[in-house]
Length: 125
Length: 363
Image 1 (cartoon, each protein chain N blue to C red):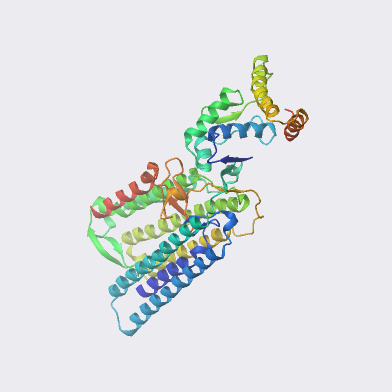
Image 2: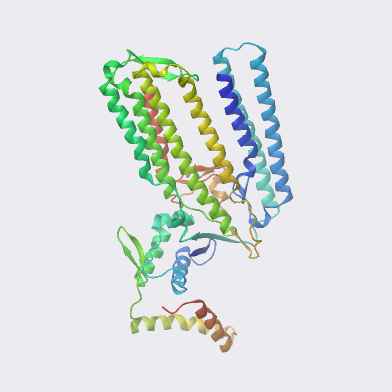
């Protein structure tokens, strides 16, 4: 899977990294059980600080998306039953983004289409 | 003999220096990164052509004068060698001056035309690229290391057979020309230096393998091709050089123990063969890697470019980037690797063994 980082963007590099890995899993480009590159190799390949990659990996682990196993690296976790707590959290994160789109003048139908195209790129896990 | 060797080496340097602009990474011109959209600029092509013509002209002049100077009179071997070294350095200095001149001009051109403005700077990698890396495994280095250990044991076992004067230096014809008194340490000196060199090469190999595989956002396929070939072929070349050095130095050591194997033409042919092998290997490597990313890429529509890293390159030659954990990165002017001076591990891999070798050689 190709990772593209915008070097001078306002979004910090570790957040871009985290988001792209999540999208990659959703699209099925990387699957549960796959291991991510070592922090050193990943940082060297991208030419970024090792702390950046480390931070992204810890973020992903905190969200339950990968598991960091000492010696064997970062492994993408299998899908688990989603808790209502987690579902609530995703809802509360999604709401302001959609609301902002409506406030800025995107019609409801356009928002639905937008969400639809995004979902089409992704696989059902 | 000296003349032939110096002539070949200088010719080799001249050819490589002349064609470098056409062998470097496609988006780097005289050590300055150029966005993919502008690499076909007429002015840049002119700079490259002028550089090559100038270096070629001076090379022909220098080599021609050297040949005339040697032929006109009977010169002493050490005179020929000394002059040979001087012309090699002169050639390197001349091409370096031309490089610096065009480095400045290219930098200016990039600034004046505002090539970087309005382009989004991207960093890119492929999670699967590590799986495509074809560098040799590190343990293959155990082979020459074990052979050296064997040679050390053999030397100790045959300590009585060694002459009272141990050779420490060999001339271009394979003839020993400097000696030192026989002690257990001086008898082992050559094999010790060999062992250190082998460890240094192993260290370089491991450090290279751990260094980044740098892909380009605008020419993903070409850059992948080049990086993977560079890694594969440089690991082969390094290993061939290790084997050749091992054979050459083992041969010298065995010749000290058994002088009869040094008789005949082998003494002259082995060092000469070593030189030819290394030079031909390097030339093939440089051309193979140099041509690996010159295929036409699809024209890119997106307004993007690779992250501009010019600020990490002093003069386009020395790389200082403390964010990059790589120990080695691809050279900007030339084919091969250069050290990341901001990573202290690199000093450890390169300079520590060199210092120890010098200490052994001079103490």
